[in-house]
Image (tube, rainbow, N blue to C red; front, side, top):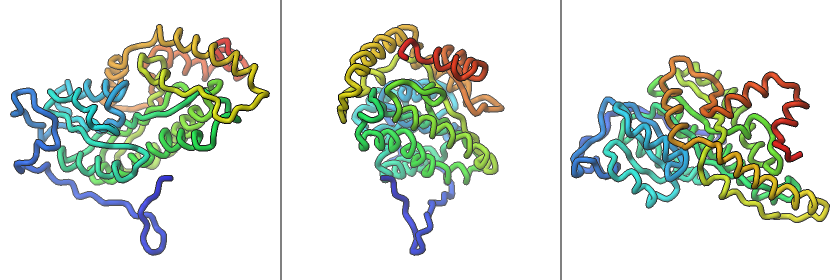
Length: 319
């Protein structure tokens, strides 16, 4: 479970930041990957900084690379295993830091290293996710809680670490990555959908609160995208119940077939990354942002169709 430091009266304490310029000391580059020009390149002192979680692959990597490839940006590319950070080795404006959203000490350390290296955090791209294909009753309590620890509480942990920095700046933008699973329910994904719905509701609430501090927030409801996420979703029956045997025999292959069809028409992560770049530069940022065509269409249908009709449509023939 996530814990926060408290004082003797049990009141949660938050770190307060006094922003300073990045160090000019000889160990500056220890925080940075190898520079393009034989190790001589340096990050810009006037650039903005985006902190990206889950940067080792998929959308996180695409966003980190996209921003790093544009002038005026420094990138804090965070990941659980920094050995995978070699993909950024030729980018002088990228720092690779360890961050596991389920280990609060790594979250705090990554934010502190980002501020020490780049001086500020302008954008947080809250991106990690975990899910599986399981009927609710056949999902072990541990797995259900893991989905929330990663997809919800993990995101909150990163926000708690970053927000004091943004408050000190009186500016900042938080992008909480959900998915279309935060817009409508999907069979056999109760834990995943519930955690994404929770993230959406939470973000809609704190968007009001953070505005008083000059900070904005958006949920990125990603649709079909070509990543390995779906392939990594577990579909083992953790708590088998005989009454579900026939249902699961029918549903698992049907969902796998629907997923393959969905992936065939999906966009590359770099296309979504370019949409994220446009979102960051919008003057008026929406609460919900759909970076993919299917997401835009489904978002409209969700608003316009009666629930009964939309549920039939969103079931993709799986009902």
